[in-house]
Length: 263
Ligand code: ADP
Ligand code: MG
Image 1 (cartoon, rainbow, N blue to C red):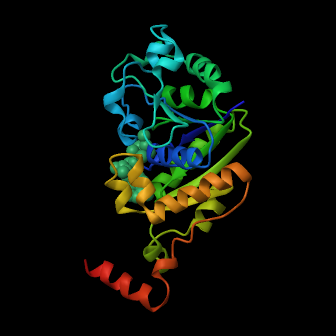
Image 2 (cartoon, rainbow, N blue to C red):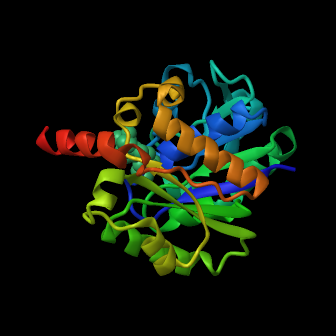
Image 3 (cartoon, helix red, strand yellow):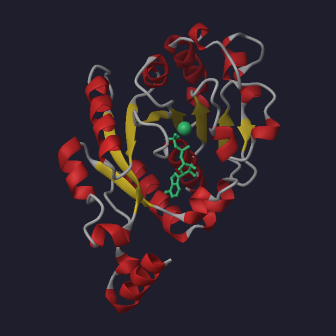
């Protein structure tokens, strides 16, 4: 049976889709069979981040409405043969799709995968509930900004009405130089406010924002390493957190920080 994990946040643009794709790739690199399901109906993004948007023949709504078998809607990743994406519909009247429908699709895929990562839309309306309904576990993605942390707090309140086995926190887009200078909230403060276990931090990384496919993540020494640690933590229960201030400490770090400030 697959572990079914929803990536959610409340706020949009914090990196759910990015982390979903990157984490999926790291889990696949560890040898697991991984399915990424895009439940952001009408605003498909996961296929774009994965670089498979031109390969879509069928999508999740085709599966739900019986136009194809579930496996026909899966797109295999070019680089990681055990990584698959089930894309969301490009345009669709969302009201026709229920949480139960998504849960059925996830159930049909259950025995073929070790991990099913569900990419949740922003907001806490019906799309959010549709995505969370089929998950056993949740990863809450936040950025180190007040608005994102507040939204995550609201989401955690709503998630308490679901029978989830675990909830973990991923802090994305952290900047070591700004944390060291006191200009960015520290991860420990976010954890003590939200009161859920920290599964990992992912640094702000230009290679991620420029990425046009999953291989670009693999090239990134910082975000790629951070996501590998998250994959390991999720699988083994370890608590290894990426050292996001390392490159800004010491003499060379101080030079880098001052150069970055001047740019
Ligand atoms: P969401 O799914 O939560 O709406 P996305 O994953 O689409 O957010 O990310 C929003 C934007 O932020 C994208 O342009 C993405 O490339 C960028 N981004 C996400 N994480 C990082 C990161 N760690 N470093 C740099 N850019 C990032
Ligand atoms: Mg998204």
